[in-house]
Image 1 (cartoon, rainbow, N blue to C red):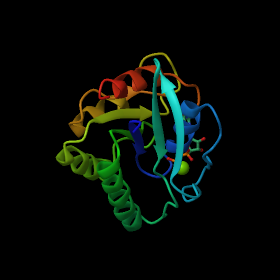
Image 2: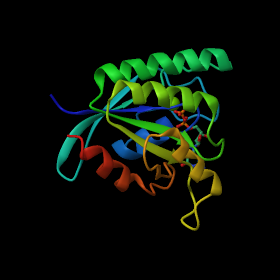
Image 3: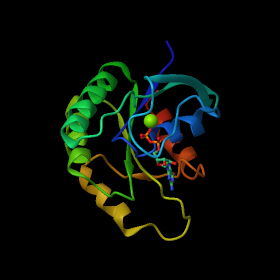
Length: 164
Ligand code: GDP
Ligand code: MG
């Protein structure tokens, strides 16, 4: 069985964009509004000679806050049960949200290896001050990534590979 790396996070943080960047193909649909990733999308890729299965857990994402939280709980639970490592993806543009905190707590309690990534860090200059608030999640040092440009994705995969 190949290791499974699942990308979990709120709608619109860039899960599908990151998935496509890491897979090197556009398998998953990226949209400006949440709710368009058709299904859970799987792809196989490799890093440093290790192959693994990457999962975009987006699915059909809801729009109301209440639904988003319960949807995220379900997605996180499935990832907890099936993944070898979970990438918890957040968005520096919206900053840390209550639902990020809630899902982070759930992931933390599971004892699964979690790699925290902060997406949309597009500039390579000084980090956005909002980046530092993600330390408050208690998931360790956040890794700055830009799914659009690919910045930080090597560090992200290095962090995942240490668990398999
Ligand atoms: P998902 O709902 O988590 O799958 O998010 P998507 O991958 O569909 O992306 C949501 C929006 O964020 C789209 O408008 C993307 O173009 C945008 N986006 C994703 N990654 C980045 C990034 O690294 N930088 C910027 N500036 N925008 C991004
Ligand atoms: Mg998506």
